[in-house]
Length: 358
Image 1 (cartoon, rainbow, N blue to C red):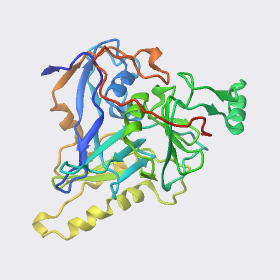
Image 2 (image 1 turned 90 degrees about the vertical axis):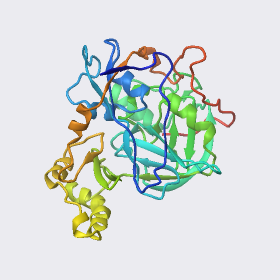
Image 3 (image 1 turned 180 degrees about the vertical axis):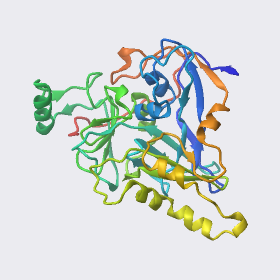
Image 4 (image 1 turned 135 degrees about the vertical axis):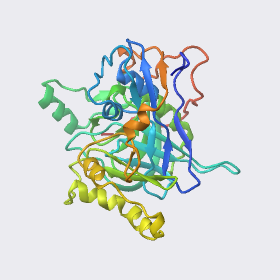
């Protein structure tokens, strides 16, 4: 059965109430059939997912021409990162950032999540804890010599030493400075790279996501960078695993399956304490498959639970009739929207510019 999506504006940000029943999974999978002029990248950006997520959820489908009547799986269901849930948590392998704003009095706590572009090989983002130390609107960029040299060797072209503020600036229009030297979370002038390995250590956001979080996150917010390629979640006493391609620059001597087992250990320990009639039997074949195959969706890992493909097959298919973003949207500027259709996203005020950034 087809249902009709609205045909103007953009999808709301990925904001969810935090589960209060012990669950660690938020969001729902969707399936859409796009108009012929939409690409997977258009659909990904509309629903706030990245390149890696949308392509992994639709193996074998063309990025540029999904095809007439294609049914595109939108992987907007997420396993939350390990606790504590506060401030910003960035899971590098998952290529996703989570923001846990302080709960307002009398209101339920929420989580906001955004896809990110991560560091290229050889430019790894440091792991560990830091905090947000500054915010920059319309930053300029003084290009480090190391990046200019790399660009010259790869392309034979010279990068300018300085990029002024504007839509051609690789830093985008907004930047959040972390306590790690030269590491920023910032917008980008190449939004189609979100979900890929594109940066020199910084984390890239869609311009509209940067515009949304910028005015709402205070300086001093804690930030934790982690690298967990295997994430384990629970919902209504059912266990799920999502797996992402490990970032090999972070030295780990364990096999993928051992890393998955380590992530699953809390679940194993928890189920050991149940009465025999309530204990969980895990599907070890499925777990071994997940240790070597990268998926964007939480997969059930208990015996007797239907595979995620069966869940997807039972979902209604929605017609996706939004206009494509177009090649001109691959800039630092916000996409153009119909008058009155732009979601409520405050215009950030302030700040110093011209940060040194990777």
